[in-house]
Structure formats: C-alpha cells, structure tokens
Image 1 (cartoon, rainbow over the protein chains, first blue to last red):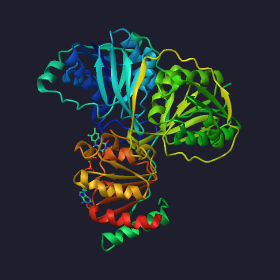
Image 2: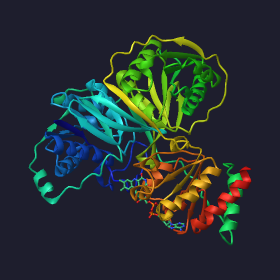
Image 3: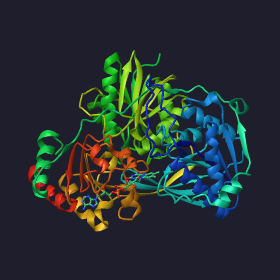
Image 4: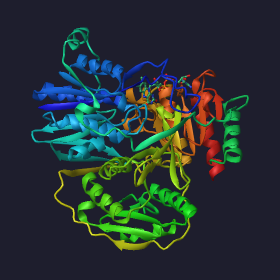
Length: 256
Length: 323
Ligand SMILES: Cc1cc2nc3c(=O)[nH]c(=O)nc-3n(C[C@H](O)[C@H](O)[C@H](O)COP(=O)(O)OP(=O)(O)OC[C@H]3O[C@@H](n4cnc5c(N)ncnc54)[C@H](O)[C@@H]3O)c2cc1C
C-alpha cells in the first residue's frame, strides 16, 4: 500500500500569540513549533495501515526550513520517507496554493490513500484536505473517527451534527483525521536515530511547477475583541450564590 | 460582471438547518447594501417545499436541485451541482455554513472554482463592494480579516453567531438540471443520535463539565440543569479522555467549537485548549471551587464554590425563572 500523510508545523497549543503592531501577522520569535495535533492522528493511521497491510508511508509538508523538524518527527514515528516543499514563495500561501502544491507532488508518487489533519490549528481553515482531493480528482472523507481498509476501498465513520455516517469509498481517496481516530504514538529513541538517515526530498516551487499566489489573503491580523471583565457572584452560601446568578442571567445578561 | 450574494442552504430530512436561515439573513444584509439579489442553492430529494422558508428569511431566488442521488449528502455529487449553479449564475459572493457539511462542501467547491475561501467567519462586511470576512485564527488567540482576490468570494459562517431575522422576499423557485453520475462514495448507514438533544454546535445553551465532575455519575446534575434550560451537555477533554463522556461532547481545540448564548463551565479549569472551543460564546458562566482557575478570566459571571452544591440550587432557581 502506498500511503501519504500530509503534515504541517504549527505553534504549540500553549503558545501565546502576539499580533504584530502593524497587523501584518503574528510575532514568531517566542513560539515553540510542533506537528499539528490533527496531523498526528493522520500519521498514526497511516502507520497502522502500513503495519497491517504492508507498504510505505511518505510524509509531505509545505513549510519553511523549520518544517523539516516536523517531517523528521513523522519519520521518527515510523514513516519511511519525506518530501519537503520549501520556498519563500509559499509564505502567505492559502489552502488553495498549498493543496495544489501537495497535489503536484502526490501526482508523481504512487498513492492509494492520503491522510491530512482535519484542520491546522494555526490558521484553523480546514480546507487543504478537500482542496487536495479536488486537485487529485479523488473522493474525500473529512472528519473521520474510524477507518477500515478493505482492499480497493475504505469504510469510515464520520460524525455529523446529531448523527454518524458510515461511508464506503473507492481508493484512492483523501481522509482527514480528527480526535477519536486513534492514539498517536510517540517517537521512540531508536526511531529518532533512524529518522536522521531516512531520505527527505526538498523541492522548491519551480521544481513542482505550481502557482504560488494566494486567492484568500489575510489582509490584517487583529487581537481578539476584549471581553469586559466578569463579575464574581456574591452570596453567603451556595443557595444564595445560585439565586443571584439566576437573577443576573435573567435580568442582566438576558440569556434565560 | 459577478453580482449578488448566493447562499448554499443546508437541509436534512425535509427540514432546513438553522444555519440556512442565518445564511439567508446575513446574505440579505450584504445584498441590500448594493441593491443586489440574494439567491440560494437548495439540493436534496423532495426539497422544493423548503424554498418558501428561505424566501421568508430574505432569499429572492432559490435554485432547487431535486434528485434522489443528492440524499443523503455525498460530497462529490453536491460539489458538482453546487459549482455548476454558481458558475451559471455568477454571484459576487457565496456563503456556506461552517457546519460539518458546509465545511466539507465549501472547500471542495472553492477548489473547483479555483477561488479562495474564508472559513468559519464570525463577521462579514463589505468594504468598497468587496467582502471582508473576519475569522478567528490560532484558536481565537487572534483574528484575521480575509479578502479574496478571485471570483466568487467564498466564505463559510460559524453557526449560531449570525442572527436569523425574517425579511420576506419571493423565494421564487428555479429548477436546476442535475445529472449526477456514478459516485465513488456511498453512505451505507446513518446512525442517528436518539437522545433528542441539539448538537453542541447548534445549541443555545451548553452546560459543560470537566474533571471536577469526579466521574460519569456527576453529570446527572448537569443533565438536569441542561434539561431546564433546554440546553446540551458538553465536556472538557479531561472528561472525554477519562471515558466519562463520548468524544462528540468534547469542546475545545481538538473537539468542537461552539457559540451558544450561554455556556456554563462546571469543574473546568479553563486550559487554553478548552477556551479555544468556547470563547466566542455570548455569555460565559464558570462554577469552580478554585478562585485562581483561569476560566474565571473569560467568564462573565463566576461562582467560586463547590459545583455539587451550586448546580442543583441553580437548577431549582432556573426552574422557577423559566416556569
Ligand atoms: C494538543 C492538545 C489539545 C487539547 N485539546 C483540548 C480540547 O479540545 N478540549 C479540552 O477541554 N482540553 C483540551 N486539551 C487539554 C487541556 O490542556 C486540559 O488538560 C483540559 O482542558 C483540562 O480539563 P479540565 O478543565 O476538565 O480538568 P482540570 O484542569 O483538572 O480542571 C478541573 C477543575 O475542576 C475544579 N473542581 C474540582 N472539583 C470541583 C468541585 N467540587 N466544585 C467546583 N470545581 C471543582 C478544579 O478546581 C479545576 O479547576 C488539549 C491539550 C493538548 C495538549
């Protein structure tokens, strides 16, 4: 089986995000970078499929030089080889550009199934999986929590609002992973050592031949709207506090 | 020249989803600024009757695609038909819901049209006739104002954020020709949640519990409060990972992003990853015995006390208030 896992390097979920004074983006100085948590579910599922059915896992990332660390993390988890699409021309790329860059590389590789995270926790856009599927002309299964491989097809569970869908799709296809799909493994020490010798192909925009102009642009980055300071509800005992809270919710906030 | 605002309505089993009305009202507001029309795409099987309701919420024209192959929703079929209707009618702006279905569909359609998409927006406005879509990024730690330099300009709107208001327009039906070919994906089974509870992403009231609930039994008092407030019970990741609550109840960065009118956090410390999922709630209440818990920095109203004492009292108070 030829399995692809797409990964992105993002700020750690604990990271403080500071908006640049001119609104042109965020201050990157203090940030600790990690693999997008949703991509970890994708990489784990790719490795599980390989362990069960044989084959090969290729990780692909579009990102600056530091994104190599994330590719190495996936290799240390057990992926076999990597492709790093790295070019300053991709700074400010939107999902459309990224999806087309990934597709250009994936088209040159044998592929049965492609995993993405359901969204990256930096721009929170959640578009790359679907756009990649469109660029490859294959079906997409987004927000998957369970996957069964059956030769030329996969059967997945996909929760929607108030229901769960069971869907069968012919391969190749793109699957976007979310929490519930599996428990991502940690890279082992021998894994980390081995990862250093695994091949990673670095390509620039010219090598893959895709346009790099974003269709959607963040014209301005702004801090979140300030919330007025809250009130601590007073009272001598839980009953009094509950009564006062009820009154505030009814009369002041008007939410009940 | 591209003109007007088109919404992609969402329905399930013979009823419009609430987000469809939110889309219609938002589109109406935008279109009125330029004196343009609002149109809607409505796909499924036997859906024509729903056009009138879209009309009631401000839609002038409804493109109805009726075909058994469009029910239940399958991405590729819906994407093909939706993209065709958009191409044939050339709207300047297209709005989807940022629901599970809307997110799945909007990205596929935007890619088909080779245009850009602003996902999960919490505000949209026009600036010199061009769409400016505001959306949370980095889990709400900052916001981006997105412009789209391609046509049409596509955005998806976060459910429960934009008001739905009646504003009657014609809702005139135009049937669209939908030939849907053989699909590579097949829905084998739809397993419905039989609890009768509204999904967290659509709930007006959420009562959430964390590790402070001590165990699965603890949630009974939250269920009671939620029942009185016609709300849905949510959970922190700690509670889900402990197996006390199902994954679908998790609120936060790796769970659901919710925007209810009222979010009551009980025994939840307010880790940054939890805040990521609920900070766009309109009113936040925290009940926690630790006065230093970070949740209080986000709460509109905080109660510092034992939740097992406060919550049942609050349920009794609310019962009287809503009676
Ligand atoms: C990559 C990543 C993703 C994550 N995603 C999510 C996510 O999506 N959602 C999420 O929620 N978390 C997420 N987390 C986990 C997050 O960091 C916290 O660990 C989690 O939110 C803590 O849950 P909690 O508040 O229920 O538990 P705790 O932090 O243990 O807090 C329990 C609280 O209950 C209070 N308490 C205890 N007993 C009582 C009582 N009797 N009365 C009143 N108060 C009481 C305590 O004072 C305490 O504040 C993520 C973490 C990582 C690293």
